[in-house]
Length: 344
Image (cartoon, rainbow, N blue to C red; front, side):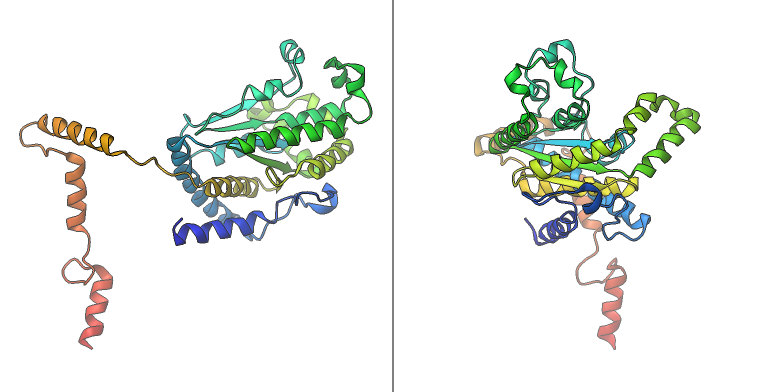
């Protein structure tokens, strides 16, 4: 990495360290993480500007990831209803190529999915090498919704021994092992929990009711699920405690401010891609010779009066117009100032 990239990586690392759940720690979500936390960003304008820079950085590294085709990235987004998952996906991924990013949404399991083990439907949606896949809700539903609503466990038709009192601890171990397997095989797992306050969720639900264009986003089931708020907070706390690992740590993103949640998500993903350090593949000597032959053939096809290689000609033109290092004519403001200093 260049010095500039190193400095950027260090700044991002320091920023997201505030959000990371230390592996092995015991989490009490309500006490340990504030949904209104500003993460050191005082003004929204500053956050929006930083997000713009982060999106540009993500776009560059995503191109490298796709070109190298060695690593894959899985992003797991978890949140309660109205937590901002869709908006996070839309804004953070806005600069990336649609060909390299895919979103997988997981609703109520189908009959076919219930005929398999609980990780089966998630395994079928994993990213390919060079790609990024976002799980909008993820395999963690199996220790969240299923835990808060035990009737869903019955629908999975597990044998009796698999439903003993240790089912949740066992699932934590199985999920950790699965993610370790993915990490060992070149697939980074990025886990983001969008931490929304109960009051902010209420406000967002009311907006969905009050604004006609947002009515489609509201479901009465969302309010019924809100009645289980405390149970979800306990399930989230236990999930974060048991499954934040060195190879796939959790990041708790303060979600009461949408712009800040998007900035935090972009920072965590940028840190992951910088850490991977994907590079454009180097062209082999035989391939270079083939490119040279193709270039000559294409240059021969240039119409009369047109440059043989328009791109190369435009680059050369820009170089001629670029200000000289020593000032002089066309040297720009810096050159003029340097000249005046010398005269003095």
